[in-house]
Image (tube, rainbow, N blue to C red):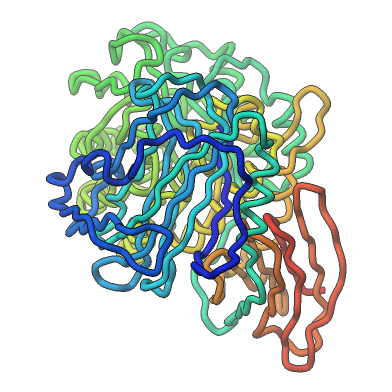
Length: 605
C-alpha cells in the first residue's frame, strides 16, 4: 500500500490540465449513485441526489449527518469494483468534495479508502479528504495508488467514510482509473502534484500567542515484547546515539515475567526490558511500561488474541505481577518507572478494558502500588487512536477516587490524518479541564503500513509522518510524540547497513521545532494544503517553524519574524536535504521557495 497526498482545488476552468490517457474505469457508471449510502441510521443521516451545474458532473450526492461517530465507517459509501484488477496495477482515484461542519467552523471531512470488500479488509490506500475553507468551493481530490492484491469484480471497493463530524458534505464525480503498467506510480504522483501547485502563500507566526510547552520527541522500544533478549537492537542503538530522545516506552512481557502463578522470571525478554529501563534511567528519560500480552493462566484466550478480558477475580494476580516487576526495576535495575498502562485497552490489544473496568482496576492497583512503595502512576487511556480517546478517558478523569493514581492523558496518533479536528481538539480540552499533560505514546500515521512491501524508506512515509506530527501537536496540545518504534519495527534506519531513512531525517529536523522546553506559538496560513507549526525557545530569542507541503511547488512569505533575522532553512524532499541561510526583510518577512511534497524547518541563527 502506498498512500499519496496529492490533491487539487478544482477551478472548473477551460483548459484545465488533464490526466494521462489510457486508463480503464473500474467502478460502475455513476459510481456515487450505484449503491445507497450505508449506515445512515447510525448517525441519523440523510442522503439525497441533487442536480449540479457549472461542474464536470451533472448531479451530486449530498449527505447531512446530524452527529458524528467514534467509528468513522458508521456512515459510509462503499462502491464495489465492476472490472478486474491485478496486484500491482497503478490506479488513480478522483472525486470532488465540498461542504462544512454543521456549526460552520470546519470544512467537510471525509476519508477515502480502496480496500478488499471482505475480511481482512486489506487496504491499498487510505486518504483523508477535506473540503475547502471557503465551503462553497469544490476541492478535487486525486489519489494515486497501487493495488495491494488481485481482485475480481466485487472483491474490492472504493469507500468514502463520512461520520467524522456532524456535517453537510457534497460529493461529485467519483472515479477510479486503472492505468495498469502504462503509467508508473511515481509519474502519477508527479502529475497530481503539478496539478496542485500551492502558488504564493502567506504564513504568519504570532509570538504573542502561546500554547503548550513541548517536552521533546520520544519513542517506543518494544522489541522485548516481540521476543528480543538484547537490551536494544542495532536500530535502537543508532537512534539513541543520533537522536535527542526525550521519553521512552517499553513493553512489559507479562507472559514471560509471570508464566505461572507465583513464578517470576528475571531472564530472557523480561531481563532485556529491565536492562533497557536501566539504560533509560541512566539517561534520565521519563519512562512508560505498557502491557500487551498476558499469561494464559491469568487472562485466558489464545496467544496474541485481541480483546481478551481479564476476569475480575484475576485483578489481584495481575496487579501483583506488575508491582513485582516495577519493584525489581527499582531495587535491582536502579530505575523508578514513571508510568504504566495497558496498550490500547479500548480495542483490546491484547487486554480489553471498558472505562469502568479500567477504573476498577486502577482503584485496586493504586493502593497496592503504594503498599510496595511505588510512585508509578497510570496513564489515562493509552488508546488506539485519538478519535476514541475522549469517550474512553472522560469517565476515568471524573472518578475522584482514582485521580491520585493518574498521570498524563495518553493516546496513539494512527488516525492523525483522518480524524476530525473536533475529536483531536477534544483531547486538548480534556487536558486543560483536568490540568493534565497530553502525550502521544504511539506516534505514526498508518497502523496497517506494515502490510506494505518495504514502505519505511519511501519519501511518502516521511512526508505523512511530518503531517501527522504537525496535526497532532497543533490540535491535541500534546507535549511529546513517541514514535513507533525507535527499534527495528516501523524502522527509521535500515538495519542491514545502518543507513537512516528519510523518516529519520524528518524526525531529526523536527526535533528543532519540538525541542524540550520550547513553547508552541500561533501560526497560520492562507493555503489549504501547506501546514505550519512553530515554537519559541528554549532560551531567549530562539524560534523554529515547521512547514509541511504535501502538494505542488510554490513560495511562502513567512511573516511576523524579527526584522533582518538570520534564518537557517533546511528543505527535505525525496531528493535529499538542502540547507541555506536567508535573512528576513526590515518588516520581518522572509520569502521561501517551497518544492512540491517537501518538509521545511526554519530556525533563527
